[in-house]
Amino acid sequence: MQPSFNWIKHYPASVSVCDTQGIIVAMNQAAAKMFTKDGGMALVGTSLYACHPESANVIIRGLMETQTSNTYIIERKGVRKLVHQEPWYDQESFAGLVETVIVLPAELEIKKRE
Image (spheres, rainbow, N blue to C red):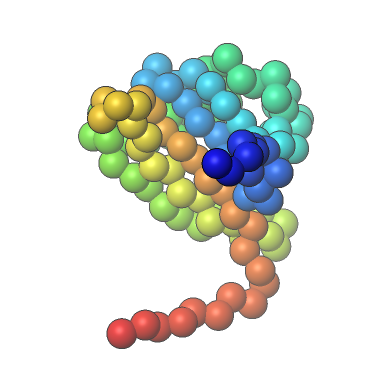
């Protein structure tokens, strides 16, 4: 049997998880660091809707309602990040969203596979 380990704790991309009500239920260390000015790990147990402008909350509520994913790239101060929001399920029941944020390198190679 493999020893248990918490791989996501030190995973370099930011991972945040919310439930169906938009309550943040988990964050890894990268997410806590990314959201330090908003409270970091203290955000667990709070509403993610309080952390976003209403225009973003409309999108989040739509993702919750339709149980669909959303992917986009943001750029701030010359740093590009890939943001991916994906539904997660507990025993086949919709349980909320997982958001992964990955810092992209300045030069990003695109590999086409056939």
